[in-house]
Length: 293
Length: 235
Image 1 (tube, one colour):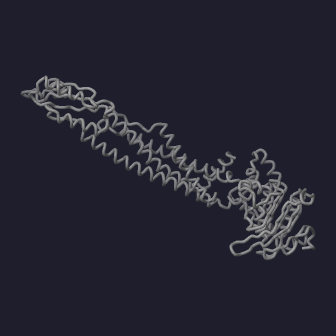
Image 2: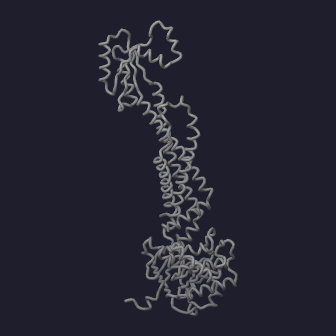
Image 3: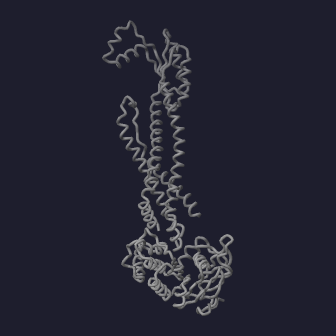
Protein backbone atom coordinates (compact mmCIF):
# COMPACT_ATOMS: atom_id res chain seq x y z
CA UNK A 1 0.00 0.00 0.00
CA UNK A 2 2.89 2.33 0.80
CA UNK A 3 4.30 1.94 -2.72
CA UNK A 4 0.91 2.72 -4.24
CA UNK A 5 0.56 5.70 -1.92
CA UNK A 6 4.03 7.00 -2.83
CA UNK A 7 3.27 6.62 -6.53
CA UNK A 8 -0.04 8.43 -6.16
CA UNK A 9 1.63 11.20 -4.17
CA UNK A 10 4.24 11.62 -6.91
CA UNK A 11 1.52 11.74 -9.58
CA UNK A 12 -0.32 14.34 -7.52
CA UNK A 13 2.77 16.49 -7.20
CA UNK A 14 3.34 16.30 -10.96
CA UNK A 15 -0.33 17.02 -11.72
CA UNK A 16 -0.42 19.98 -9.32
CA UNK A 17 3.06 21.32 -10.07
CA UNK A 18 2.30 24.98 -9.54
CA UNK A 19 0.48 24.48 -6.26
CA UNK A 20 3.24 22.31 -4.86
CA UNK A 21 5.96 24.58 -6.21
CA UNK A 22 4.47 27.59 -4.41
CA UNK A 23 4.32 25.57 -1.24
CA UNK A 24 7.88 24.26 -1.57
CA UNK A 25 9.29 27.73 -2.34
CA UNK A 26 7.50 29.20 0.68
CA UNK A 27 8.83 26.45 2.92
CA UNK A 28 12.30 26.95 1.42
CA UNK A 29 12.18 30.68 2.22
CA UNK A 30 11.01 29.97 5.76
CA UNK A 31 13.77 27.40 6.25
CA UNK A 32 16.28 29.83 4.73
CA UNK A 33 15.39 32.58 7.17
CA UNK A 34 15.16 30.29 10.19
CA UNK A 35 18.45 28.55 9.37
CA UNK A 36 20.13 31.90 8.62
CA UNK A 37 19.26 32.96 12.15
CA UNK A 38 20.59 29.66 13.44
CA UNK A 39 23.78 30.22 11.48
CA UNK A 40 24.13 33.64 13.05
CA UNK A 41 23.45 32.35 16.56
CA UNK A 42 25.83 29.44 16.26
CA UNK A 43 28.62 31.65 15.03
CA UNK A 44 27.80 34.53 17.37
CA UNK A 45 27.87 32.15 20.34
CA UNK A 46 31.16 30.64 19.17
CA UNK A 47 32.49 34.10 18.54
CA UNK A 48 31.56 35.37 21.98
CA UNK A 49 33.03 32.24 23.55
CA UNK A 50 36.23 32.58 21.57
CA UNK A 51 36.49 36.24 22.44
CA UNK A 52 35.76 35.66 26.09
CA UNK A 53 38.49 33.04 26.19
CA UNK A 54 40.82 35.87 25.34
CA UNK A 55 39.28 38.27 27.84
CA UNK A 56 41.85 39.96 29.93
CA UNK A 57 41.64 43.00 32.11
CA UNK A 58 44.58 45.36 32.29
CA UNK A 59 44.86 47.36 35.50
CA UNK A 60 47.16 50.39 35.04
CA UNK A 61 48.90 51.41 38.21
CA UNK A 62 49.70 54.88 39.44
CA UNK A 63 53.22 56.20 39.74
CA UNK A 64 55.36 55.64 42.78
CA UNK A 65 53.71 52.43 43.89
CA UNK A 66 56.02 50.53 46.18
CA UNK A 67 56.78 46.91 45.40
CA UNK A 68 55.11 45.77 48.62
CA UNK A 69 51.97 47.68 47.65
CA UNK A 70 52.08 46.13 44.15
CA UNK A 71 52.45 42.64 45.59
CA UNK A 72 49.58 43.29 47.96
CA UNK A 73 47.44 44.57 45.09
CA UNK A 74 48.23 41.55 42.95
CA UNK A 75 47.41 39.25 45.84
CA UNK A 76 44.07 40.98 46.38
CA UNK A 77 43.27 40.66 42.67
CA UNK A 78 44.34 37.00 42.63
CA UNK A 79 41.90 36.24 45.43
CA UNK A 80 39.01 37.83 43.52
CA UNK A 81 36.37 35.55 42.17
CA UNK A 82 36.91 34.54 38.52
CA UNK A 83 40.58 35.41 38.27
CA UNK A 84 42.82 32.73 36.75
CA UNK A 85 46.21 34.39 36.58
CA UNK A 86 47.69 37.75 37.52
CA UNK A 87 50.88 38.94 35.89
CA UNK A 88 52.84 42.09 36.53
CA UNK A 89 54.04 43.96 33.47
CA UNK A 90 56.58 46.59 34.33
CA UNK A 91 56.61 49.85 32.43
CA UNK A 92 59.94 48.82 30.86
CA UNK A 93 58.56 45.49 29.66
CA UNK A 94 55.54 47.30 28.25
CA UNK A 95 57.80 49.80 26.49
CA UNK A 96 59.94 47.05 24.94
CA UNK A 97 56.87 45.13 23.92
CA UNK A 98 55.42 48.20 22.24
CA UNK A 99 58.69 48.85 20.48
CA UNK A 100 58.78 45.31 19.17
CA UNK A 101 55.20 45.47 17.99
CA UNK A 102 55.46 48.72 16.06
CA UNK A 103 58.70 47.50 14.43
CA UNK A 104 60.07 49.99 11.89
CA UNK A 105 58.18 52.87 13.46
CA UNK A 106 59.90 52.27 16.79
CA UNK A 107 62.25 55.18 16.09
CA UNK A 108 59.30 57.44 16.90
CA UNK A 109 59.71 56.40 20.52
CA UNK A 110 63.33 57.49 20.53
CA UNK A 111 62.25 61.12 20.76
CA UNK A 112 60.57 60.61 24.09
CA UNK A 113 62.36 61.86 27.23
CA UNK A 114 61.08 59.10 29.36
CA UNK A 115 58.94 55.97 29.17
CA UNK A 116 55.32 57.22 29.21
CA UNK A 117 53.82 53.83 29.90
CA UNK A 118 52.70 52.91 33.42
CA UNK A 119 53.29 49.70 35.31
CA UNK A 120 50.34 47.38 34.87
CA UNK A 121 48.82 44.12 35.98
CA UNK A 122 47.35 41.75 33.41
CA UNK A 123 44.47 39.67 34.74
CA UNK A 124 43.33 36.60 32.81
CA UNK A 125 39.91 35.32 33.71
CA UNK A 126 38.96 31.76 34.53
CA UNK A 127 37.30 29.73 31.72
CA UNK A 128 34.13 29.45 33.78
CA UNK A 129 33.94 33.22 34.20
CA UNK A 130 32.42 34.27 30.89
CA UNK A 131 29.28 36.27 31.56
CA UNK A 132 29.53 39.86 30.46
CA UNK A 133 27.89 41.11 33.67
CA UNK A 134 30.48 39.22 35.77
CA UNK A 135 33.38 40.56 33.73
CA UNK A 136 32.05 44.09 34.10
CA UNK A 137 31.57 43.68 37.87
CA UNK A 138 35.08 42.31 38.34
CA UNK A 139 36.59 45.09 36.25
CA UNK A 140 34.76 47.68 38.35
CA UNK A 141 35.98 46.08 41.59
CA UNK A 142 39.57 46.06 40.37
CA UNK A 143 39.23 49.63 39.13
CA UNK A 144 38.26 50.74 42.64
CA UNK A 145 41.25 49.08 44.30
CA UNK A 146 43.97 51.33 45.69
CA UNK A 147 46.88 52.19 43.35
CA UNK A 148 44.83 51.31 40.26
CA UNK A 149 44.59 54.38 38.05
CA UNK A 150 42.67 52.93 35.16
CA UNK A 151 41.44 49.67 33.77
CA UNK A 152 41.00 48.48 30.23
CA UNK A 153 38.99 45.78 28.57
CA UNK A 154 36.98 45.80 25.35
CA UNK A 155 33.84 46.77 27.18
CA UNK A 156 32.17 49.04 24.64
CA UNK A 157 32.67 46.63 21.80
CA UNK A 158 31.57 43.70 23.90
CA UNK A 159 28.49 45.59 25.04
CA UNK A 160 27.51 46.43 21.52
CA UNK A 161 27.96 42.90 20.27
CA UNK A 162 26.10 41.49 23.21
CA UNK A 163 23.26 43.93 22.57
CA UNK A 164 23.00 42.91 18.93
CA UNK A 165 23.19 39.26 19.94
CA UNK A 166 20.31 39.63 22.39
CA UNK A 167 18.24 41.64 19.91
CA UNK A 168 18.74 38.95 17.28
CA UNK A 169 17.87 36.30 19.81
CA UNK A 170 14.49 37.86 20.54
CA UNK A 171 13.79 38.73 16.90
CA UNK A 172 14.91 35.27 15.86
CA UNK A 173 12.59 33.52 18.26
CA UNK A 174 9.64 35.64 17.13
CA UNK A 175 10.47 35.07 13.46
CA UNK A 176 10.99 31.34 13.92
CA UNK A 177 7.56 31.12 15.59
CA UNK A 178 5.92 33.14 12.81
CA UNK A 179 7.54 31.08 10.08
CA UNK A 180 6.66 27.86 11.87
CA UNK A 181 2.97 28.81 11.93
CA UNK A 182 3.10 30.18 8.37
CA UNK A 183 4.69 27.00 7.04
CA UNK A 184 2.16 24.88 8.88
CA UNK A 185 -0.74 26.85 7.43
CA UNK A 186 0.71 26.87 3.93
CA UNK A 187 1.19 23.12 3.86
CA UNK A 188 -2.24 22.52 5.40
CA UNK A 189 -3.77 24.81 2.79
CA UNK A 190 -1.94 23.21 -0.13
CA UNK A 191 -3.05 19.76 0.95
CA UNK A 192 -6.61 21.02 1.39
CA UNK A 193 -6.59 22.52 -2.11
CA UNK A 194 -5.26 19.26 -3.57
CA UNK A 195 -7.97 17.39 -1.67
CA UNK A 196 -10.57 19.80 -2.97
CA UNK A 197 -9.45 19.25 -6.56
CA UNK A 198 -9.55 15.51 -5.93
CA UNK A 199 -12.77 15.37 -3.93
CA UNK A 200 -14.66 13.43 -6.63
CA UNK A 201 -11.79 10.99 -6.94
CA UNK A 202 -11.75 10.54 -3.17
CA UNK A 203 -15.49 9.87 -3.25
CA UNK A 204 -15.07 7.27 -6.02
CA UNK A 205 -12.20 5.58 -4.19
CA UNK A 206 -14.35 5.42 -1.07
CA UNK A 207 -17.23 3.83 -2.96
CA UNK A 208 -15.00 1.09 -4.36
CA UNK A 209 -13.93 0.17 -0.84
CA UNK A 210 -10.83 2.19 0.02
CA UNK A 211 -10.11 2.46 3.71
CA UNK A 212 -9.03 5.71 5.36
CA UNK A 213 -5.35 4.77 5.20
CA UNK A 214 -5.53 4.28 1.43
CA UNK A 215 -7.03 7.75 1.05
CA UNK A 216 -4.82 9.50 3.58
CA UNK A 217 -1.35 8.06 2.94
CA UNK A 218 -0.71 9.81 -0.39
CA UNK A 219 -1.49 13.16 1.20
CA UNK A 220 0.94 12.46 4.03
CA UNK A 221 3.58 11.47 1.47
CA UNK A 222 2.94 14.72 -0.38
CA UNK A 223 3.26 16.78 2.80
CA UNK A 224 6.45 14.97 3.81
CA UNK A 225 7.85 15.44 0.30
CA UNK A 226 6.97 19.14 0.40
CA UNK A 227 8.64 19.51 3.77
CA UNK A 228 11.72 17.60 2.60
CA UNK A 229 12.11 19.46 -0.69
CA UNK A 230 11.41 22.83 0.93
CA UNK A 231 13.87 22.09 3.75
CA UNK A 232 16.65 20.97 1.38
CA UNK A 233 16.04 23.91 -0.98
CA UNK A 234 16.14 26.39 1.93
CA UNK A 235 19.43 24.96 3.19
CA UNK A 236 20.92 25.00 -0.31
CA UNK A 237 19.95 28.66 -0.64
CA UNK A 238 21.64 29.38 2.67
CA UNK A 239 24.76 27.43 1.69
CA UNK A 240 24.94 29.33 -1.59
CA UNK A 241 24.63 32.65 0.25
CA UNK A 242 27.25 31.44 2.73
CA UNK A 243 29.90 30.48 0.18
CA UNK A 244 29.31 33.69 -1.75
CA UNK A 245 29.52 35.92 1.32
CA UNK A 246 32.08 34.45 3.72
CA UNK A 247 35.19 34.64 1.46
CA UNK A 248 34.51 38.38 1.10
CA UNK A 249 34.86 38.94 4.83
CA UNK A 250 38.39 40.27 5.26
CA UNK A 251 40.65 39.40 8.22
CA UNK A 252 40.03 42.93 9.48
CA UNK A 253 36.34 42.26 9.82
CA UNK A 254 36.73 38.85 11.35
CA UNK A 255 39.12 38.17 14.16
CA UNK A 256 41.96 35.82 13.52
CA UNK A 257 41.03 33.58 16.42
CA UNK A 258 37.62 32.90 15.01
CA UNK A 259 36.47 31.03 11.92
CA UNK A 260 32.90 31.36 10.58
CA UNK A 261 31.36 27.92 10.20
CA UNK A 262 28.30 26.72 8.30
CA UNK A 263 25.65 24.96 10.38
CA UNK A 264 26.55 21.36 11.18
CA UNK A 265 25.34 18.34 9.22
CA UNK A 266 23.38 17.17 12.27
CA UNK A 267 21.69 20.51 12.60
CA UNK A 268 20.93 20.60 8.85
CA UNK A 269 19.35 17.15 9.08
CA UNK A 270 17.35 18.31 12.10
CA UNK A 271 16.04 21.28 10.11
CA UNK A 272 15.00 19.01 7.22
CA UNK A 273 13.40 16.59 9.66
CA UNK A 274 11.51 19.42 11.40
CA UNK A 275 10.40 20.73 8.03
CA UNK A 276 9.01 17.29 7.17
CA UNK A 277 7.31 17.04 10.54
CA UNK A 278 5.68 20.43 10.03
CA UNK A 279 4.40 19.06 6.72
CA UNK A 280 3.05 16.00 8.47
CA UNK A 281 1.29 18.04 11.17
CA UNK A 282 -0.13 20.47 8.57
CA UNK A 283 -1.46 17.52 6.58
CA UNK A 284 -2.87 15.89 9.70
CA UNK A 285 -5.00 18.93 10.55
CA UNK A 286 -6.02 19.44 6.95
CA UNK A 287 -7.13 15.83 6.53
CA UNK A 288 -8.95 15.86 9.84
CA UNK A 289 -10.95 18.83 8.74
CA UNK A 290 -11.53 17.78 5.14
CA UNK A 291 -12.27 14.11 5.60
CA UNK A 292 -13.95 14.71 8.97
CA UNK A 293 -12.15 11.75 10.48
CA UNK B 1 -31.83 -22.52 13.19
CA UNK B 2 -31.47 -20.66 9.94
CA UNK B 3 -33.59 -22.09 7.16
CA UNK B 4 -32.24 -22.64 3.66
CA UNK B 5 -34.46 -19.85 2.36
CA UNK B 6 -33.17 -17.50 5.04
CA UNK B 7 -29.56 -18.28 4.16
CA UNK B 8 -30.38 -17.50 0.55
CA UNK B 9 -31.20 -13.87 1.34
CA UNK B 10 -28.37 -11.44 0.59
CA UNK B 11 -30.17 -8.12 1.18
CA UNK B 12 -32.93 -7.43 3.65
CA UNK B 13 -34.50 -4.05 4.36
CA UNK B 14 -36.82 -3.77 7.37
CA UNK B 15 -38.97 -0.68 7.87
CA UNK B 16 -36.27 1.56 6.45
CA UNK B 17 -36.80 5.31 6.54
CA UNK B 18 -34.54 7.97 5.11
CA UNK B 19 -35.12 11.64 5.74
CA UNK B 20 -33.26 14.71 4.50
CA UNK B 21 -34.37 17.34 6.96
CA UNK B 22 -38.16 17.40 6.73
CA UNK B 23 -38.22 15.64 3.37
CA UNK B 24 -38.83 11.92 3.55
CA UNK B 25 -36.97 10.14 0.73
CA UNK B 26 -37.86 6.59 1.80
CA UNK B 27 -40.75 5.54 4.01
CA UNK B 28 -41.10 2.22 5.79
CA UNK B 29 -39.34 0.27 3.07
CA UNK B 30 -39.18 -3.48 3.62
CA UNK B 31 -38.11 -6.13 1.14
CA UNK B 32 -35.63 -8.93 0.57
CA UNK B 33 -33.36 -9.87 -2.29
CA UNK B 34 -32.01 -13.38 -2.71
CA UNK B 35 -28.56 -14.36 -3.85
CA UNK B 36 -28.08 -14.21 -7.64
CA UNK B 37 -31.39 -12.45 -8.15
CA UNK B 38 -31.79 -9.93 -10.97
CA UNK B 39 -33.85 -7.03 -9.67
CA UNK B 40 -35.12 -3.87 -11.27
CA UNK B 41 -35.89 -1.02 -8.89
CA UNK B 42 -38.13 1.33 -10.77
CA UNK B 43 -40.34 4.31 -10.28
CA UNK B 44 -40.55 7.93 -11.38
CA UNK B 45 -37.87 10.50 -10.70
CA UNK B 46 -37.68 11.30 -7.00
CA UNK B 47 -39.20 7.95 -6.04
CA UNK B 48 -36.16 7.06 -3.95
CA UNK B 49 -34.37 4.59 -6.26
CA UNK B 50 -30.95 6.24 -5.99
CA UNK B 51 -31.37 6.80 -2.26
CA UNK B 52 -32.06 3.10 -1.81
CA UNK B 53 -28.93 2.19 -3.80
CA UNK B 54 -26.87 4.63 -1.68
CA UNK B 55 -28.16 3.10 1.54
CA UNK B 56 -27.00 -0.32 0.40
CA UNK B 57 -23.36 0.62 -0.20
CA UNK B 58 -23.45 3.02 2.75
CA UNK B 59 -23.08 6.14 0.67
CA UNK B 60 -25.80 7.30 3.07
CA UNK B 61 -27.13 5.96 6.35
CA UNK B 62 -30.77 5.11 7.01
CA UNK B 63 -32.62 7.40 9.43
CA UNK B 64 -34.32 4.38 10.97
CA UNK B 65 -35.00 0.74 10.27
CA UNK B 66 -32.58 -2.08 9.58
CA UNK B 67 -30.60 -3.04 6.50
CA UNK B 68 -28.79 -6.35 6.36
CA UNK B 69 -26.31 -7.08 3.61
CA UNK B 70 -24.88 -10.59 3.46
CA UNK B 71 -25.77 -11.02 7.12
CA UNK B 72 -24.23 -7.70 8.23
CA UNK B 73 -26.43 -5.17 9.99
CA UNK B 74 -25.40 -1.85 8.48
CA UNK B 75 -26.61 0.10 11.50
CA UNK B 76 -24.11 -1.71 13.70
CA UNK B 77 -21.16 -2.06 11.39
CA UNK B 78 -17.96 -0.58 12.88
CA UNK B 79 -16.65 2.38 10.92
CA UNK B 80 -13.46 0.55 10.00
CA UNK B 81 -15.46 -2.30 8.48
CA UNK B 82 -17.34 -0.08 6.01
CA UNK B 83 -14.65 -0.38 3.29
CA UNK B 84 -14.84 -4.18 3.55
CA UNK B 85 -18.60 -4.01 3.15
CA UNK B 86 -18.26 -1.79 0.09
CA UNK B 87 -15.94 -4.35 -1.51
CA UNK B 88 -18.90 -6.71 -1.63
CA UNK B 89 -20.46 -4.32 -4.14
CA UNK B 90 -19.69 -3.23 -7.65
CA UNK B 91 -21.43 0.09 -8.24
CA UNK B 92 -22.31 1.57 -11.63
CA UNK B 93 -23.58 5.14 -12.00
CA UNK B 94 -25.41 7.00 -14.73
CA UNK B 95 -22.59 9.57 -14.84
CA UNK B 96 -19.97 6.75 -14.84
CA UNK B 97 -17.85 8.29 -12.07
CA UNK B 98 -14.55 7.53 -13.78
CA UNK B 99 -11.41 9.38 -12.72
CA UNK B 100 -10.49 11.52 -15.74
CA UNK B 101 -6.80 11.80 -14.85
CA UNK B 102 -6.31 8.04 -14.72
CA UNK B 103 -6.16 5.72 -17.71
CA UNK B 104 -8.89 3.17 -18.28
CA UNK B 105 -6.57 0.47 -16.95
CA UNK B 106 -5.84 2.53 -13.83
CA UNK B 107 -9.52 3.27 -13.24
CA UNK B 108 -10.30 -0.43 -13.22
CA UNK B 109 -7.18 -1.55 -11.39
CA UNK B 110 -7.88 0.86 -8.54
CA UNK B 111 -10.46 -1.59 -7.17
CA UNK B 112 -7.79 -4.27 -6.83
CA UNK B 113 -5.20 -1.83 -5.48
CA UNK B 114 -7.68 -0.84 -2.80
CA UNK B 115 -8.18 -4.51 -1.98
CA UNK B 116 -4.41 -4.86 -1.54
CA UNK B 117 -3.58 -7.08 -4.52
CA UNK B 118 -0.06 -7.10 -5.95
CA UNK B 119 0.69 -5.50 -9.31
CA UNK B 120 1.47 -8.85 -10.97
CA UNK B 121 -1.97 -10.16 -9.95
CA UNK B 122 -3.73 -6.96 -10.95
CA UNK B 123 -2.59 -6.78 -14.57
CA UNK B 124 -4.04 -10.06 -15.90
CA UNK B 125 -7.31 -9.60 -14.03
CA UNK B 126 -7.84 -6.08 -15.32
CA UNK B 127 -6.93 -7.01 -18.89
CA UNK B 128 -9.27 -10.00 -18.74
CA UNK B 129 -12.22 -7.91 -17.58
CA UNK B 130 -11.48 -5.17 -20.11
CA UNK B 131 -11.50 -7.82 -22.81
CA UNK B 132 -14.85 -9.11 -21.58
CA UNK B 133 -16.40 -5.66 -21.93
CA UNK B 134 -14.62 -5.21 -25.27
CA UNK B 135 -12.41 -2.25 -24.41
CA UNK B 136 -9.01 -3.86 -23.83
CA UNK B 137 -7.50 -2.15 -26.88
CA UNK B 138 -8.08 1.25 -25.26
CA UNK B 139 -6.64 0.41 -21.84
CA UNK B 140 -4.05 3.20 -21.92
CA UNK B 141 -6.46 5.92 -22.99
CA UNK B 142 -8.14 8.37 -20.66
CA UNK B 143 -11.91 8.52 -20.00
CA UNK B 144 -12.55 11.94 -21.59
CA UNK B 145 -11.79 10.53 -25.08
CA UNK B 146 -14.36 7.73 -24.76
CA UNK B 147 -18.01 7.77 -25.85
CA UNK B 148 -20.77 7.42 -23.25
CA UNK B 149 -21.24 3.73 -24.02
CA UNK B 150 -17.52 3.08 -23.75
CA UNK B 151 -17.31 4.92 -20.45
CA UNK B 152 -20.14 2.81 -19.10
CA UNK B 153 -18.34 -0.36 -20.25
CA UNK B 154 -15.31 0.80 -18.28
CA UNK B 155 -17.57 1.41 -15.28
CA UNK B 156 -18.96 -2.12 -15.64
CA UNK B 157 -15.43 -3.50 -15.90
CA UNK B 158 -14.59 -1.65 -12.69
CA UNK B 159 -17.67 -3.09 -11.03
CA UNK B 160 -16.82 -6.61 -12.21
CA UNK B 161 -13.10 -6.76 -11.58
CA UNK B 162 -13.36 -7.23 -7.83
CA UNK B 163 -15.78 -10.17 -8.38
CA UNK B 164 -18.36 -8.62 -6.05
CA UNK B 165 -21.33 -10.50 -4.66
CA UNK B 166 -23.69 -7.67 -5.56
CA UNK B 167 -23.70 -5.27 -8.49
CA UNK B 168 -25.67 -2.06 -8.05
CA UNK B 169 -26.41 -0.04 -11.16
CA UNK B 170 -28.03 3.37 -10.80
CA UNK B 171 -29.61 4.32 -14.15
CA UNK B 172 -26.78 2.60 -16.05
CA UNK B 173 -28.29 3.30 -19.46
CA UNK B 174 -29.84 6.64 -18.63
CA UNK B 175 -27.51 8.70 -20.78
CA UNK B 176 -26.89 6.19 -23.57
CA UNK B 177 -28.28 5.65 -27.06
CA UNK B 178 -30.45 2.51 -27.54
CA UNK B 179 -27.65 0.39 -29.09
CA UNK B 180 -25.18 1.23 -26.33
CA UNK B 181 -27.90 0.69 -23.72
CA UNK B 182 -28.63 -2.78 -25.15
CA UNK B 183 -24.92 -3.65 -25.04
CA UNK B 184 -24.60 -2.46 -21.46
CA UNK B 185 -27.62 -4.49 -20.47
CA UNK B 186 -26.10 -7.61 -22.05
CA UNK B 187 -22.97 -7.05 -19.98
CA UNK B 188 -25.04 -6.75 -16.80
CA UNK B 189 -26.78 -10.00 -17.68
CA UNK B 190 -23.38 -11.63 -18.14
CA UNK B 191 -22.40 -10.41 -14.67
CA UNK B 192 -25.58 -11.97 -13.32
CA UNK B 193 -24.92 -15.24 -15.09
CA UNK B 194 -21.45 -15.26 -13.56
CA UNK B 195 -23.16 -15.48 -10.15
CA UNK B 196 -23.60 -11.92 -8.91
CA UNK B 197 -26.81 -10.45 -7.54
CA UNK B 198 -27.69 -7.55 -9.84
CA UNK B 199 -29.87 -4.62 -8.77
CA UNK B 200 -30.66 -2.04 -11.42
CA UNK B 201 -32.35 1.23 -10.56
CA UNK B 202 -34.03 2.47 -13.72
CA UNK B 203 -37.10 4.26 -14.98
CA UNK B 204 -36.65 2.74 -18.43
CA UNK B 205 -39.88 0.74 -18.71
CA UNK B 206 -38.88 -0.63 -22.10
CA UNK B 207 -35.78 -2.22 -20.62
CA UNK B 208 -37.84 -3.77 -17.83
CA UNK B 209 -40.51 -5.18 -20.07
CA UNK B 210 -37.94 -6.61 -22.51
CA UNK B 211 -35.99 -8.54 -19.90
CA UNK B 212 -36.55 -11.05 -17.16
CA UNK B 213 -36.13 -10.02 -13.57
CA UNK B 214 -37.99 -9.11 -10.45
CA UNK B 215 -39.35 -5.58 -10.29
CA UNK B 216 -39.51 -3.45 -7.16
CA UNK B 217 -41.53 -0.33 -7.76
CA UNK B 218 -41.15 2.74 -5.60
CA UNK B 219 -43.40 5.77 -5.50
CA UNK B 220 -42.77 8.77 -3.28
CA UNK B 221 -40.29 6.76 -1.25
CA UNK B 222 -42.81 4.00 -0.58
CA UNK B 223 -42.91 0.49 -1.84
CA UNK B 224 -45.60 0.30 -4.53
CA UNK B 225 -45.06 -3.33 -5.54
CA UNK B 226 -42.45 -6.04 -5.54
CA UNK B 227 -42.02 -7.42 -2.04
CA UNK B 228 -42.86 -10.91 -3.07
CA UNK B 229 -40.50 -13.04 -5.03
CA UNK B 230 -41.16 -13.37 -8.49
CA UNK B 231 -42.06 -12.12 -11.71
CA UNK B 232 -42.78 -8.64 -12.78
CA UNK B 233 -46.43 -9.39 -13.40
CA UNK B 234 -46.89 -9.32 -9.65
CA UNK B 235 -45.38 -5.88 -9.35
